[in-house]
Length: 318
Image 1 (cartoon, rainbow, N blue to C red):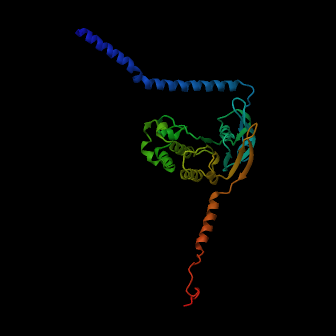
Image 2: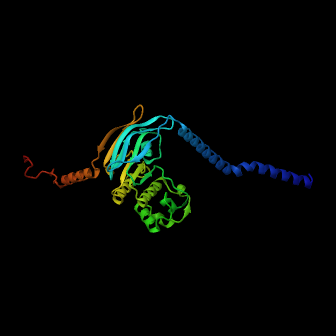
Image 3: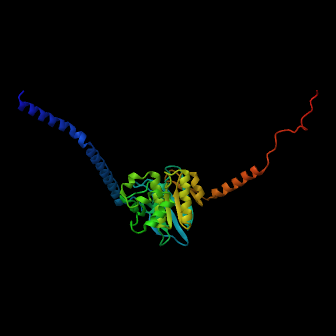
């Protein structure tokens, strides 16, 4: 082979090698493009479904008004349905006074989360009305809090402006929810939605409550990513820092009953879930105190000796 033929063969090999390596070099870009296309397609399908539901005359709308009397919130014949007309919750009547802490319970699929979304104004299909006291602010904490891009300060202040609160107030809020180790990163611009764990995101959402100080709080499994001890600390902190706030929460953990004064139970039935019970809760802390006193009394009672004295022993014949 001449030198020219060798050079041509080398050049051809380099071209073939580059062609085979294109897929490897561009695979991350293709994966990113595929993920973006899927998200856009899912968004367009959701928007089309929303538009069809808005144009449909078969679906009713939940009305929103002002609560009468001294009630903080009231549900009048509230029925909640899906965008296809399927009934989820049917004819619910509830009146919640200011400062009450109401726990919404029920088996999975009974419509608890859909009900609280309707109360928060995030779900409009159904019937009846949701009435809230005039000039009262409602704040909702979902199971997976939204964390915007940008600085941590913006994430804590969401949905308010990042400069609405001073750094000292934001640091104090982070301290109270157990995120004090992030105080040095408040001004850092990072992908916090990917950096923070599920439990840290839920703690961050509780820090938002302290900053915004709303009148009504709607908790939708807002402590599901926390362990029981951390959950108790978050609820105790809210009760202590916002003693007059009205709370409506959805949860499956029985331990949360200790932080609520009232419990309503939904039961799934054919044609939509119904409210089957509405009871006042006895604070579990009182029961714990009674148990502690009982155990203390038991400890105070001296134990009977199991050893016999020599006088009590029978004499043995020699």
